[in-house]
Figure 1 (cartoon, rainbow, N blue to C red):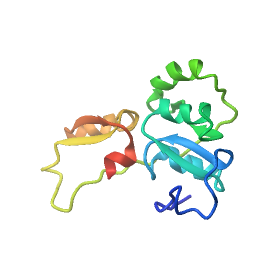
Figure 2: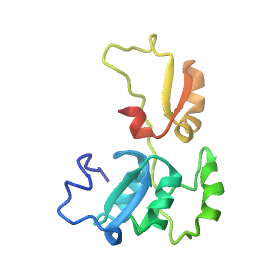
Figure 3: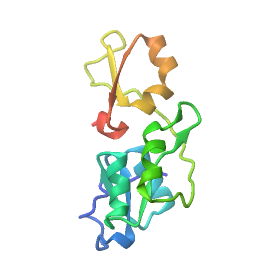
Figure 4: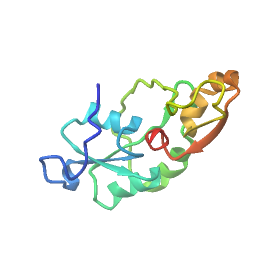
Length: 150
């Protein structure tokens, strides 16, 4: 399902309240944002800089739900979650499987010979590690996929 990059708390016609808000880690356009829109298309989204901030948004009643990745089929567990969730006082109430399709983005001036480093979320780098190694590209972790693409 395509997402609207224009989704913001201010541009939606509904008033942003905790009852109709779902928090996620990352920027608009991140895979967690896409999962929020797939599962809860009528809810407002609240982008958060970290998983801890997304969980805190629910605990602090700034959001009713948080969409948090637990694991993926290629790179395994999302380590931070298994540390943060037990102490958050929150519970898993459902699950969603989001298809992930990574694309290598570069400026128009770049070509395969000029690429040296790929910046993305650590989980995405893990999912693409075989291709990145085959291309001889260094990996540089970033907070999320959408932010690194920006």
